[in-house]
Length: 537
Ligand code: MAN
Image (tube, rainbow, N blue to C red):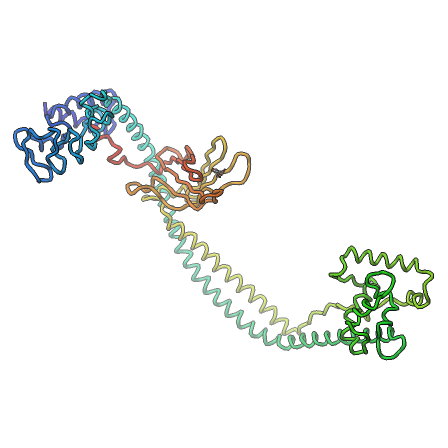
Protein backbone atom coordinates (compact mmCIF):
# COMPACT_ATOMS: atom_id res chain seq x y z
CA UNK A 1 0.00 0.00 0.00
CA UNK A 2 2.78 2.39 0.98
CA UNK A 3 4.65 1.89 -2.32
CA UNK A 4 1.35 2.38 -4.14
CA UNK A 5 0.74 5.63 -2.31
CA UNK A 6 4.24 6.86 -3.03
CA UNK A 7 3.54 6.14 -6.70
CA UNK A 8 0.24 8.03 -6.50
CA UNK A 9 1.97 11.01 -4.94
CA UNK A 10 4.68 10.99 -7.61
CA UNK A 11 2.15 10.89 -10.45
CA UNK A 12 0.18 13.69 -8.81
CA UNK A 13 3.23 15.88 -8.39
CA UNK A 14 4.29 15.25 -11.96
CA UNK A 15 0.82 15.94 -13.37
CA UNK A 16 0.43 19.19 -11.50
CA UNK A 17 3.91 20.43 -12.25
CA UNK A 18 3.82 19.72 -15.95
CA UNK A 19 0.11 20.12 -16.62
CA UNK A 20 0.24 17.20 -19.00
CA UNK A 21 -2.92 15.42 -17.90
CA UNK A 22 -6.59 16.03 -18.36
CA UNK A 23 -8.35 17.56 -15.33
CA UNK A 24 -10.42 14.40 -14.73
CA UNK A 25 -7.23 12.32 -14.47
CA UNK A 26 -5.78 14.82 -12.01
CA UNK A 27 -8.97 14.65 -9.93
CA UNK A 28 -8.80 10.84 -9.88
CA UNK A 29 -5.25 10.97 -8.55
CA UNK A 30 -6.27 13.66 -6.08
CA UNK A 31 -8.89 11.29 -4.65
CA UNK A 32 -6.31 8.53 -4.36
CA UNK A 33 -4.01 11.03 -2.61
CA UNK A 34 -6.75 11.75 -0.08
CA UNK A 35 -6.97 8.06 0.67
CA UNK A 36 -3.21 7.65 0.85
CA UNK A 37 -2.60 10.69 3.05
CA UNK A 38 -4.87 9.25 5.74
CA UNK A 39 -3.06 5.92 5.48
CA UNK A 40 0.08 6.92 7.49
CA UNK A 41 -0.86 6.55 11.19
CA UNK A 42 0.13 9.56 13.27
CA UNK A 43 -1.30 11.60 16.11
CA UNK A 44 -3.85 14.28 15.30
CA UNK A 45 -2.35 17.52 14.00
CA UNK A 46 0.97 15.95 12.93
CA UNK A 47 2.27 16.39 9.40
CA UNK A 48 3.41 13.46 7.27
CA UNK A 49 6.97 14.68 7.40
CA UNK A 50 6.96 14.62 11.20
CA UNK A 51 5.00 11.38 11.64
CA UNK A 52 8.17 9.37 12.39
CA UNK A 53 8.89 11.60 15.44
CA UNK A 54 5.69 10.38 17.06
CA UNK A 55 6.10 6.61 17.46
CA UNK A 56 3.64 4.87 19.82
CA UNK A 57 6.38 2.26 20.47
CA UNK A 58 8.60 4.63 22.40
CA UNK A 59 8.53 7.62 24.69
CA UNK A 60 8.12 11.03 23.10
CA UNK A 61 11.08 13.43 23.10
CA UNK A 62 10.05 17.09 22.97
CA UNK A 63 11.41 18.69 19.77
CA UNK A 64 13.55 21.04 21.84
CA UNK A 65 15.03 17.98 23.64
CA UNK A 66 13.95 19.45 26.96
CA UNK A 67 11.89 16.47 28.10
CA UNK A 68 10.97 12.90 27.39
CA UNK A 69 7.42 11.93 28.21
CA UNK A 70 5.33 8.80 27.86
CA UNK A 71 3.72 8.56 24.41
CA UNK A 72 0.32 8.43 26.14
CA UNK A 73 0.92 12.07 27.17
CA UNK A 74 0.93 13.18 23.52
CA UNK A 75 -2.31 14.99 22.72
CA UNK A 76 -3.66 14.38 26.24
CA UNK A 77 -4.76 18.04 26.35
CA UNK A 78 -2.03 18.89 28.84
CA UNK A 79 1.02 20.85 27.76
CA UNK A 80 4.24 19.05 28.77
CA UNK A 81 6.82 20.31 26.26
CA UNK A 82 7.80 23.99 26.47
CA UNK A 83 7.85 24.09 22.66
CA UNK A 84 4.29 22.68 22.48
CA UNK A 85 5.38 19.68 20.41
CA UNK A 86 3.52 17.16 22.62
CA UNK A 87 0.13 18.75 21.87
CA UNK A 88 -0.07 19.04 18.08
CA UNK A 89 -3.74 18.12 18.03
CA UNK A 90 -5.15 20.15 20.95
CA UNK A 91 -5.12 23.73 22.02
CA UNK A 92 -3.35 22.92 25.32
CA UNK A 93 -0.03 24.53 24.43
CA UNK A 94 -0.06 28.23 23.62
CA UNK A 95 2.74 27.74 21.06
CA UNK A 96 1.45 24.48 19.55
CA UNK A 97 1.13 23.96 15.81
CA UNK A 98 -1.78 22.03 14.32
CA UNK A 99 -1.25 20.55 10.90
CA UNK A 100 -4.18 19.90 8.59
CA UNK A 101 -3.44 17.56 5.71
CA UNK A 102 -6.22 19.06 3.57
CA UNK A 103 -5.78 16.14 1.23
CA UNK A 104 -6.74 17.14 -2.28
CA UNK A 105 -5.74 20.74 -1.61
CA UNK A 106 -2.99 22.62 0.26
CA UNK A 107 -1.91 21.44 3.74
CA UNK A 108 -1.95 24.09 6.43
CA UNK A 109 -0.13 24.75 9.71
CA UNK A 110 -2.37 26.50 12.23
CA UNK A 111 -1.75 28.02 15.64
CA UNK A 112 -3.19 25.33 17.93
CA UNK A 113 -5.37 27.95 19.66
CA UNK A 114 -7.58 27.69 16.57
CA UNK A 115 -8.30 24.02 17.21
CA UNK A 116 -11.92 23.52 18.21
CA UNK A 117 -12.58 27.25 18.37
CA UNK A 118 -15.79 26.97 16.36
CA UNK A 119 -14.30 28.24 13.12
CA UNK A 120 -13.49 25.96 10.18
CA UNK A 121 -9.90 26.78 9.30
CA UNK A 122 -8.88 23.59 7.53
CA UNK A 123 -10.76 22.69 4.35
CA UNK A 124 -10.86 19.08 5.53
CA UNK A 125 -12.53 20.24 8.79
CA UNK A 126 -9.92 18.42 10.90
CA UNK A 127 -9.34 21.43 13.21
CA UNK A 128 -12.93 21.22 14.51
CA UNK A 129 -13.06 17.58 15.51
CA UNK A 130 -14.87 18.18 18.83
CA UNK A 131 -17.94 19.09 16.80
CA UNK A 132 -19.69 20.67 19.80
CA UNK A 133 -19.72 24.11 18.25
CA UNK A 134 -19.56 23.56 14.52
CA UNK A 135 -19.48 20.76 11.99
CA UNK A 136 -17.09 21.37 9.15
CA UNK A 137 -17.47 19.52 5.88
CA UNK A 138 -14.46 18.51 3.86
CA UNK A 139 -14.35 20.83 0.86
CA UNK A 140 -10.71 20.22 -0.05
CA UNK A 141 -11.47 18.39 -3.28
CA UNK A 142 -13.56 21.26 -4.65
CA UNK A 143 -11.04 23.87 -3.50
CA UNK A 144 -8.18 21.77 -4.82
CA UNK A 145 -9.89 21.36 -8.19
CA UNK A 146 -10.49 25.05 -8.45
CA UNK A 147 -6.92 25.84 -7.41
CA UNK A 148 -5.54 23.37 -9.93
CA UNK A 149 -7.67 24.82 -12.72
CA UNK A 150 -6.53 28.27 -11.76
CA UNK A 151 -2.92 27.13 -11.63
CA UNK A 152 -3.29 25.47 -15.01
CA UNK A 153 -4.76 28.64 -16.49
CA UNK A 154 -1.90 30.59 -14.99
CA UNK A 155 0.66 28.16 -16.28
CA UNK A 156 -0.74 28.32 -19.80
CA UNK A 157 -0.72 32.10 -19.63
CA UNK A 158 2.82 32.09 -18.39
CA UNK A 159 3.87 29.73 -21.14
CA UNK A 160 2.43 32.03 -23.80
CA UNK A 161 3.66 35.15 -21.99
CA UNK A 162 7.17 33.82 -21.53
CA UNK A 163 7.57 33.47 -25.24
CA UNK A 164 6.64 37.12 -25.74
CA UNK A 165 8.75 38.11 -22.76
CA UNK A 166 11.79 36.50 -24.37
CA UNK A 167 11.27 38.72 -27.41
CA UNK A 168 10.87 41.77 -25.19
CA UNK A 169 14.07 40.90 -23.34
CA UNK A 170 15.93 40.50 -26.58
CA UNK A 171 14.74 43.90 -27.73
CA UNK A 172 15.55 45.44 -24.35
CA UNK A 173 19.06 44.02 -24.32
CA UNK A 174 19.63 45.20 -27.87
CA UNK A 175 18.36 48.67 -27.00
CA UNK A 176 20.68 48.85 -24.02
CA UNK A 177 23.63 47.75 -26.14
CA UNK A 178 22.81 50.39 -28.72
CA UNK A 179 22.61 53.03 -25.99
CA UNK A 180 25.97 51.92 -24.62
CA UNK A 181 27.53 52.12 -28.06
CA UNK A 182 25.97 55.54 -28.57
CA UNK A 183 27.40 56.64 -25.24
CA UNK A 184 30.93 55.64 -26.30
CA UNK A 185 30.46 57.51 -29.56
CA UNK A 186 29.11 60.57 -27.76
CA UNK A 187 32.04 60.60 -25.34
CA UNK A 188 34.37 60.69 -28.35
CA UNK A 189 32.29 63.41 -29.98
CA UNK A 190 32.36 65.37 -26.75
CA UNK A 191 36.15 65.24 -26.59
CA UNK A 192 36.29 66.48 -30.17
CA UNK A 193 33.69 69.19 -29.52
CA UNK A 194 35.60 70.36 -26.47
CA UNK A 195 38.77 70.63 -28.50
CA UNK A 196 36.95 72.69 -31.10
CA UNK A 197 35.48 74.85 -28.34
CA UNK A 198 38.92 75.45 -26.84
CA UNK A 199 40.28 76.45 -30.28
CA UNK A 200 37.36 78.75 -30.92
CA UNK A 201 37.81 80.30 -27.50
CA UNK A 202 41.46 80.95 -28.27
CA UNK A 203 40.61 82.53 -31.62
CA UNK A 204 37.89 84.62 -30.02
CA UNK A 205 40.12 85.80 -27.16
CA UNK A 206 42.88 86.75 -29.63
CA UNK A 207 40.67 88.71 -31.99
CA UNK A 208 38.77 90.32 -29.10
CA UNK A 209 42.03 91.64 -27.71
CA UNK A 210 42.73 93.24 -31.09
CA UNK A 211 39.17 94.51 -31.27
CA UNK A 212 39.45 96.07 -27.84
CA UNK A 213 42.56 97.86 -28.82
CA UNK A 214 41.13 99.02 -32.13
CA UNK A 215 37.96 100.26 -30.49
CA UNK A 216 39.73 102.10 -27.69
CA UNK A 217 40.10 105.17 -29.83
CA UNK A 218 36.47 104.98 -30.94
CA UNK A 219 35.28 104.61 -27.39
CA UNK A 220 37.11 107.77 -26.49
CA UNK A 221 35.55 109.48 -29.47
CA UNK A 222 32.16 108.23 -28.47
CA UNK A 223 32.59 109.51 -24.94
CA UNK A 224 33.82 112.80 -26.26
CA UNK A 225 30.83 113.03 -28.57
CA UNK A 226 28.49 112.31 -25.68
CA UNK A 227 30.14 114.94 -23.58
CA UNK A 228 29.90 117.50 -26.34
CA UNK A 229 26.30 116.68 -26.87
CA UNK A 230 25.56 117.14 -23.20
CA UNK A 231 27.38 120.46 -23.19
CA UNK A 232 25.52 121.60 -26.29
CA UNK A 233 22.24 120.65 -24.64
CA UNK A 234 23.17 122.62 -21.54
CA UNK A 235 24.17 125.65 -23.61
CA UNK A 236 20.98 125.47 -25.63
CA UNK A 237 18.99 125.27 -22.44
CA UNK A 238 20.78 128.31 -21.12
CA UNK A 239 20.08 130.30 -24.26
CA UNK A 240 16.41 129.40 -24.10
CA UNK A 241 16.22 130.23 -20.43
CA UNK A 242 17.99 133.56 -20.94
CA UNK A 243 15.68 134.50 -23.79
CA UNK A 244 12.66 133.70 -21.66
CA UNK A 245 14.15 135.61 -18.70
CA UNK A 246 14.55 138.71 -20.85
CA UNK A 247 11.03 138.35 -22.17
CA UNK A 248 9.52 137.98 -18.68
CA UNK A 249 11.62 140.76 -17.12
CA UNK A 250 9.18 143.45 -18.26
CA UNK A 251 10.70 146.23 -16.13
CA UNK A 252 14.18 145.20 -17.24
CA UNK A 253 15.59 145.28 -13.68
CA UNK A 254 17.56 142.07 -14.08
CA UNK A 255 15.15 140.18 -11.81
CA UNK A 256 12.01 138.20 -12.37
CA UNK A 257 9.52 138.75 -9.58
CA UNK A 258 6.14 137.29 -8.76
CA UNK A 259 4.17 140.12 -10.37
CA UNK A 260 5.98 139.56 -13.66
CA UNK A 261 4.80 135.96 -13.69
CA UNK A 262 1.31 136.82 -12.44
CA UNK A 263 0.55 138.63 -15.67
CA UNK A 264 1.02 135.41 -17.67
CA UNK A 265 -1.87 133.05 -18.06
CA UNK A 266 0.53 130.16 -18.62
CA UNK A 267 1.14 130.06 -14.87
CA UNK A 268 -2.51 129.93 -13.87
CA UNK A 269 -2.12 126.36 -12.71
CA UNK A 270 -5.65 125.95 -11.42
CA UNK A 271 -7.15 127.78 -14.38
CA UNK A 272 -9.31 130.01 -12.22
CA UNK A 273 -8.66 133.07 -14.38
CA UNK A 274 -5.84 134.57 -12.34
CA UNK A 275 -2.29 133.69 -11.41
CA UNK A 276 -2.11 133.80 -7.64
CA UNK A 277 1.05 134.63 -5.71
CA UNK A 278 1.22 131.02 -4.61
CA UNK A 279 1.14 129.86 -8.21
CA UNK A 280 3.81 132.33 -9.24
CA UNK A 281 5.94 131.34 -6.25
CA UNK A 282 5.85 127.69 -7.33
CA UNK A 283 7.54 128.67 -10.60
CA UNK A 284 10.18 130.74 -8.85
CA UNK A 285 10.98 127.84 -6.56
CA UNK A 286 9.42 129.60 -3.55
CA UNK A 287 11.43 132.76 -4.05
CA UNK A 288 9.98 136.28 -4.29
CA UNK A 289 12.29 137.08 -7.18
CA UNK A 290 15.23 135.51 -8.97
CA UNK A 291 18.18 136.82 -10.97
CA UNK A 292 19.24 135.27 -14.25
CA UNK A 293 21.47 132.57 -12.70
CA UNK A 294 18.84 131.47 -10.21
CA UNK A 295 16.24 131.64 -12.95
CA UNK A 296 18.30 129.25 -15.08
CA UNK A 297 19.06 126.76 -12.32
CA UNK A 298 15.93 126.88 -10.11
CA UNK A 299 13.00 128.44 -11.98
CA UNK A 300 13.55 127.35 -15.58
CA UNK A 301 13.09 123.60 -14.87
CA UNK A 302 9.60 124.47 -13.45
CA UNK A 303 8.68 126.95 -16.13
CA UNK A 304 9.82 125.14 -19.27
CA UNK A 305 7.29 122.25 -19.15
CA UNK A 306 4.42 124.75 -18.86
CA UNK A 307 5.67 126.74 -21.80
CA UNK A 308 6.03 123.58 -23.83
CA UNK A 309 2.56 122.48 -22.81
CA UNK A 310 1.16 125.82 -23.91
CA UNK A 311 2.93 125.41 -27.22
CA UNK A 312 1.47 121.90 -27.52
CA UNK A 313 4.93 120.38 -27.49
CA UNK A 314 4.79 118.57 -24.20
CA UNK A 315 2.15 117.01 -21.97
CA UNK A 316 3.88 116.41 -18.70
CA UNK A 317 3.01 113.47 -16.50
CA UNK A 318 1.97 115.14 -13.29
CA UNK A 319 0.89 114.02 -9.89
CA UNK A 320 -1.21 117.12 -9.48
CA UNK A 321 -3.31 116.69 -12.61
CA UNK A 322 -4.55 113.51 -14.23
CA UNK A 323 -4.37 113.22 -18.02
CA UNK A 324 -8.13 113.84 -18.11
CA UNK A 325 -7.72 116.97 -16.05
CA UNK A 326 -4.94 118.14 -18.32
CA UNK A 327 -7.20 117.78 -21.34
CA UNK A 328 -9.87 119.72 -19.51
CA UNK A 329 -7.30 122.33 -18.71
CA UNK A 330 -6.28 122.68 -22.33
CA UNK A 331 -9.88 122.82 -23.51
CA UNK A 332 -10.66 125.41 -20.86
CA UNK A 333 -7.67 127.37 -22.00
CA UNK A 334 -8.93 127.41 -25.57
CA UNK A 335 -12.38 128.52 -24.43
CA UNK A 336 -10.91 131.32 -22.37
CA UNK A 337 -8.85 132.47 -25.29
CA UNK A 338 -11.98 132.67 -27.41
CA UNK A 339 -14.23 134.19 -24.77
CA UNK A 340 -11.74 136.70 -23.57
CA UNK A 341 -12.27 139.46 -26.13
CA UNK A 342 -12.68 142.24 -23.55
CA UNK A 343 -9.64 141.66 -21.39
CA UNK A 344 -6.92 144.19 -20.73
CA UNK A 345 -4.20 145.11 -23.15
CA UNK A 346 -1.42 143.06 -21.63
CA UNK A 347 -3.41 139.92 -21.96
CA UNK A 348 -4.21 140.83 -25.52
CA UNK A 349 -0.55 141.36 -26.11
CA UNK A 350 0.15 138.02 -24.57
CA UNK A 351 -2.37 136.30 -26.79
CA UNK A 352 -0.48 137.60 -29.75
CA UNK A 353 2.79 136.44 -28.31
CA UNK A 354 4.56 133.80 -30.31
CA UNK A 355 4.19 130.46 -28.64
CA UNK A 356 7.25 129.06 -26.97
CA UNK A 357 9.60 127.41 -29.43
CA UNK A 358 12.60 125.43 -28.33
CA UNK A 359 15.79 126.18 -30.20
CA UNK A 360 15.77 122.91 -32.10
CA UNK A 361 14.62 119.33 -31.68
CA UNK A 362 16.13 118.19 -28.38
CA UNK A 363 16.56 114.43 -28.81
CA UNK A 364 18.40 114.27 -32.05
CA UNK A 365 19.61 110.67 -32.46
CA UNK A 366 23.37 110.39 -32.48
CA UNK A 367 24.81 109.03 -35.65
CA UNK A 368 26.55 105.65 -35.26
CA UNK A 369 30.27 105.97 -35.41
CA UNK A 370 31.78 104.78 -38.63
CA UNK A 371 34.88 102.65 -38.14
CA UNK A 372 37.75 102.87 -40.50
CA UNK A 373 38.14 99.94 -42.89
CA UNK A 374 40.79 98.13 -40.86
CA UNK A 375 38.85 98.49 -37.58
CA UNK A 376 35.62 97.38 -39.23
CA UNK A 377 37.42 94.29 -40.50
CA UNK A 378 38.61 93.45 -36.98
CA UNK A 379 35.14 94.04 -35.51
CA UNK A 380 33.63 91.75 -38.15
CA UNK A 381 36.21 89.08 -37.47
CA UNK A 382 35.58 89.34 -33.72
CA UNK A 383 31.83 89.08 -34.27
CA UNK A 384 32.17 85.94 -36.34
CA UNK A 385 34.71 84.49 -33.83
CA UNK A 386 32.16 85.11 -31.07
CA UNK A 387 29.44 83.41 -33.11
CA UNK A 388 31.67 80.45 -33.86
CA UNK A 389 32.59 80.12 -30.20
CA UNK A 390 28.92 80.25 -29.17
CA UNK A 391 28.20 77.58 -31.77
CA UNK A 392 31.01 75.35 -30.43
CA UNK A 393 29.78 75.92 -26.89
CA UNK A 394 26.26 74.89 -27.91
CA UNK A 395 27.59 71.74 -29.60
CA UNK A 396 29.31 70.67 -26.35
CA UNK A 397 26.17 71.40 -24.35
CA UNK A 398 24.00 69.40 -26.74
CA UNK A 399 26.30 66.38 -26.54
CA UNK A 400 26.43 66.66 -22.75
CA UNK A 401 22.69 66.66 -22.46
CA UNK A 402 22.43 63.65 -24.80
CA UNK A 403 25.02 61.84 -22.67
CA UNK A 404 23.07 62.67 -19.53
CA UNK A 405 19.83 61.31 -20.91
CA UNK A 406 21.53 58.07 -22.04
CA UNK A 407 23.18 57.70 -18.64
CA UNK A 408 19.80 58.15 -16.98
CA UNK A 409 18.37 55.50 -19.29
CA UNK A 410 21.18 53.08 -18.49
CA UNK A 411 20.64 53.61 -14.77
CA UNK A 412 16.98 52.59 -15.03
CA UNK A 413 16.08 49.10 -13.86
CA UNK A 414 14.16 47.47 -16.70
CA UNK A 415 14.11 44.04 -15.04
CA UNK A 416 16.74 41.31 -14.72
CA UNK A 417 16.60 40.60 -18.47
CA UNK A 418 15.67 44.10 -19.68
CA UNK A 419 12.18 42.75 -20.30
CA UNK A 420 10.43 45.98 -19.27
CA UNK A 421 12.64 48.22 -21.44
CA UNK A 422 10.32 48.36 -24.41
CA UNK A 423 7.56 49.87 -22.23
CA UNK A 424 9.58 53.03 -21.81
CA UNK A 425 8.31 55.80 -24.06
CA UNK A 426 4.85 54.24 -24.38
CA UNK A 427 1.60 55.15 -22.61
CA UNK A 428 -1.44 52.99 -21.85
CA UNK A 429 -4.95 54.34 -21.24
CA UNK A 430 -7.71 53.07 -19.03
CA UNK A 431 -11.15 54.60 -18.97
CA UNK A 432 -13.78 54.36 -16.23
CA UNK A 433 -17.09 56.21 -16.00
CA UNK A 434 -15.44 59.44 -14.82
CA UNK A 435 -11.79 59.58 -15.85
CA UNK A 436 -9.27 58.54 -18.45
CA UNK A 437 -6.19 57.27 -16.64
CA UNK A 438 -2.82 57.00 -18.29
CA UNK A 439 0.20 54.93 -17.37
CA UNK A 440 3.44 55.93 -19.07
CA UNK A 441 5.84 53.35 -17.63
CA UNK A 442 9.01 54.78 -16.12
CA UNK A 443 7.61 58.29 -16.55
CA UNK A 444 4.26 59.13 -14.96
CA UNK A 445 0.64 58.26 -14.21
CA UNK A 446 -2.16 60.72 -14.94
CA UNK A 447 -5.89 61.20 -14.60
CA UNK A 448 -8.03 63.28 -16.93
CA UNK A 449 -11.69 63.97 -16.18
CA UNK A 450 -13.95 63.01 -19.09
CA UNK A 451 -15.60 66.40 -18.61
CA UNK A 452 -12.53 67.76 -20.38
CA UNK A 453 -10.84 69.66 -17.56
CA UNK A 454 -7.09 69.58 -17.10
CA UNK A 455 -5.02 66.44 -16.63
CA UNK A 456 -3.86 65.68 -13.08
CA UNK A 457 -0.50 64.03 -12.50
CA UNK A 458 -0.99 61.08 -10.18
CA UNK A 459 2.70 60.39 -9.79
CA UNK A 460 6.17 60.51 -11.29
CA UNK A 461 8.25 57.36 -11.77
CA UNK A 462 9.84 56.48 -8.46
CA UNK A 463 10.99 52.87 -8.20
CA UNK A 464 10.12 49.19 -8.28
CA UNK A 465 8.22 48.56 -5.10
CA UNK A 466 7.41 44.85 -4.83
CA UNK A 467 8.48 42.66 -1.96
CA UNK A 468 11.88 41.04 -1.85
CA UNK A 469 10.81 37.84 -3.61
CA UNK A 470 9.49 39.81 -6.57
CA UNK A 471 10.32 43.46 -6.53
CA UNK A 472 9.03 43.77 -10.12
CA UNK A 473 5.48 43.08 -8.97
CA UNK A 474 4.80 46.74 -8.13
CA UNK A 475 5.84 50.09 -9.56
CA UNK A 476 5.64 53.23 -7.48
CA UNK A 477 4.88 56.61 -9.00
CA UNK A 478 5.04 59.29 -6.31
CA UNK A 479 5.38 63.08 -6.16
CA UNK A 480 2.11 63.69 -8.05
CA UNK A 481 -0.05 66.81 -7.88
CA UNK A 482 -1.02 67.79 -4.36
CA UNK A 483 -4.36 66.61 -3.17
CA UNK A 484 -6.69 69.35 -1.95
CA UNK A 485 -5.96 69.74 1.76
CA UNK A 486 -3.93 66.56 1.62
CA UNK A 487 -0.66 64.92 0.55
CA UNK A 488 0.81 64.68 -2.94
CA UNK A 489 -0.94 62.12 -5.10
CA UNK A 490 0.79 58.77 -5.68
CA UNK A 491 0.08 55.56 -7.57
CA UNK A 492 1.08 51.96 -7.28
CA UNK A 493 1.02 49.79 -10.35
CA UNK A 494 0.58 46.06 -9.88
CA UNK A 495 2.36 44.39 -12.77
CA UNK A 496 0.82 41.07 -13.76
CA UNK A 497 1.57 38.46 -16.42
CA UNK A 498 -0.57 38.77 -19.56
CA UNK A 499 -0.22 38.25 -23.27
CA UNK A 500 -0.52 41.96 -24.11
CA UNK A 501 0.39 45.31 -22.56
CA UNK A 502 -2.76 46.72 -21.01
CA UNK A 503 -4.07 48.59 -17.97
CA UNK A 504 -6.88 46.37 -16.73
CA UNK A 505 -8.13 48.38 -13.75
CA UNK A 506 -7.59 51.57 -11.79
CA UNK A 507 -8.97 52.28 -8.34
CA UNK A 508 -8.42 54.83 -5.57
CA UNK A 509 -8.25 52.70 -2.39
CA UNK A 510 -7.39 55.76 -0.31
CA UNK A 511 -8.04 59.36 -1.25
CA UNK A 512 -5.38 60.47 -3.75
CA UNK A 513 -3.66 57.05 -3.62
CA UNK A 514 -4.30 55.11 -6.81
CA UNK A 515 -3.85 51.48 -7.70
CA UNK A 516 -3.36 50.48 -11.33
CA UNK A 517 -3.27 46.92 -12.55
CA UNK A 518 -1.18 46.46 -15.64
CA UNK A 519 -0.76 43.22 -17.55
CA UNK A 520 2.28 42.64 -19.69
CA UNK A 521 4.21 39.64 -21.01
CA UNK A 522 7.25 41.21 -19.36
CA UNK A 523 5.84 40.13 -15.98
CA UNK A 524 5.49 36.44 -16.93
CA UNK A 525 7.86 34.38 -14.86
CA UNK A 526 8.13 30.87 -13.54
CA UNK A 527 5.71 30.00 -10.75
CA UNK A 528 7.31 30.28 -7.37
CA UNK A 529 7.03 27.43 -4.86
CA UNK A 530 4.06 29.23 -3.36
CA UNK A 531 2.27 29.18 -6.65
CA UNK A 532 2.84 25.59 -7.70
CA UNK A 533 0.75 22.78 -6.41
CA UNK A 534 3.45 20.63 -4.90
CA UNK A 535 2.29 21.35 -1.38
CA UNK A 536 -1.31 20.70 -2.13
CA UNK A 537 -0.91 16.98 -2.23
C1 MAN B 1 -9.98 64.90 -7.93
C2 MAN B 1 -9.52 63.52 -8.37
C3 MAN B 1 -9.89 62.47 -7.34
C4 MAN B 1 -9.41 62.89 -5.97
C5 MAN B 1 -9.89 64.28 -5.63
C6 MAN B 1 -9.30 64.74 -4.30
O1 MAN B 1 -11.36 64.97 -7.96
O2 MAN B 1 -8.14 63.59 -8.51
O3 MAN B 1 -9.32 61.24 -7.70
O4 MAN B 1 -9.86 62.01 -4.99
O5 MAN B 1 -9.51 65.19 -6.64
O6 MAN B 1 -9.78 65.98 -3.96
